Length: 127
Image 1 (cartoon, rainbow, N blue to C red):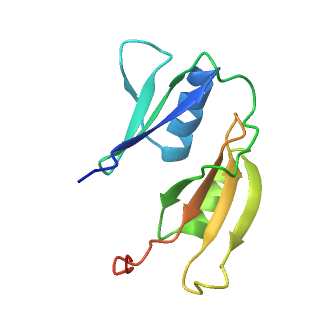
Image 2 (image 1 turned 30 degrees about the vertical axis):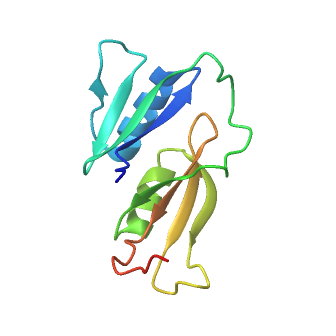
Image 3 (image 1 turned 90 degrees about the vertical axis):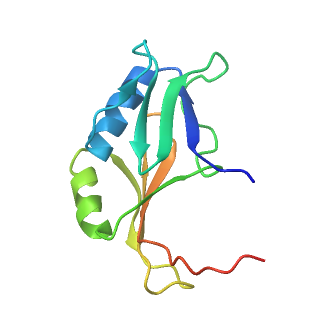
């Protein structure tokens, strides 16, 4: 059995991205011996940020992979993050198929998308 424990977000300016996510997540980053590497433990799942020699500039397909941060306070967190001057992609909305869910989308300094989402139901069936 596999267990997803982290995602590595590569950047040509990882220090900037680490500082950005520290503000968004309102927590300090873990460091691994270099200012170019950092990470955030989010309830046992790690968002790790570091350099990659093949990553340059803005994300060309920011919709390809979107980081979702779950919160029961989407509206409040949206206002807090928007107030930091973060680029808003989508104001809070409710998807048609889930009237009890709220989603809001932002772009980080590299153009990667991240979302705030209402908590998902735990009893979702898997086929």
